[in-house]
Length: 207
View: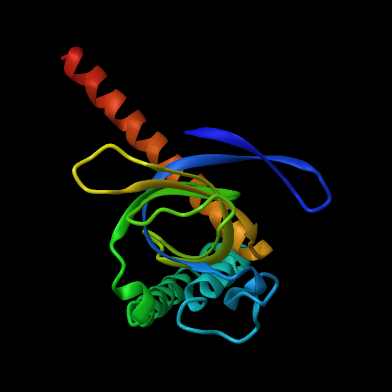
């Protein structure tokens, strides 16, 4: 995992961690005139794609209340957690019906809150604009962005393919927050797995 510099609209410098991940990714080239049109996830109305993102944010907002309920009323907390799981399953089922995403294979990507890199069957000119729809497992949260191609080069292999890197140029704040949370969760799962492996190795070497 590495970190990279990025800049906010007012020029403030930030650094975002970049991870390797497998996600569902839909992308298409767009006309520059589509820039500054509202992103689906920026609209107050919900569609099948933005539903999971909104639910994930609501879960985050209610976390402090849930902790109080768990402390004071454990049976109620257990019931609410079951309801949350049911809602999550319904949202995932609805997301699976999105025709753009249901046909997309899982892709290996290098992902951060400022952009991503992935392998594409098509070459894109530098400066091209792409619409991007990402579904982040295991929560299956949908994130939408628009980005500019900053790198595109053919890879070595039997089939023609290109490594494409995109910097986000339009990403609503709540989706950037979801990306940051996803990267942190992925990092924590990786660290836990590595620690468990190290503990197991140490135990096998010291019977």
